[in-house]
Length: 280
Image 1 (spheres, helix red, strand yellow):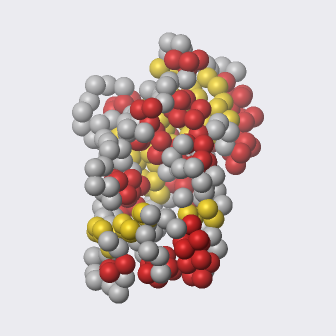
Image 2 (cartoon, helix red, strand yellow):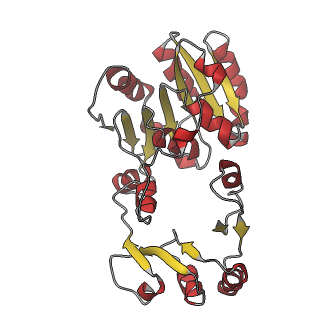
């Protein structure tokens, strides 16, 4: 994997790649790396990057990538090129580059369910409150109130990373009266094994929520209209499948606990094959 982003080391732990190569976001560095590594085949997922498109002109590997809806000077760069669709889930768009695409859940089928959670008889509700961006954050108080509203018949798993460590004390206080645990800073394999045990996932738009969606887990994902075009954002970042649901608000804090609870109550734990979409 070639990437300019320093947070992609976890891909090594997934087994999906053997090396992560970081490059500075400048043209000459990327050209030098591409020629030094002597790749045979390159998949480019960055369809709008001028730097990548120019650098690939000087690379002799077979190149597969995306093109836009309009013709550009770089269309000739790729040996195989497909239109990038923003109206489908991003993983679906990436998967389309393959000549023989696998089902999106095929990779996660390799993971076994966590043994400890497997032996818990109660249905397990996962709460994932990612801290990636302020406009995505539904407050921890709301998540806890939601769990209180759902009741004591379930086992609650709060998935936290290092950025969410500050929530631990409030969650521990909640868990004095409710069954559950804090899953803190799990590595990728353990996180996938944990989520495989979930009967329901409630989350904002964050990395672990996509693991749950690609496992076809019942999900409720919360979105805000930060980019002023939330419906397009949802098309690209929400994976629609049976028992997947989203709820959106102008601001994420506009979404009430009762709004989310109604999805849990009316959609997730009844046998339904329909999609339930809510907006406020």
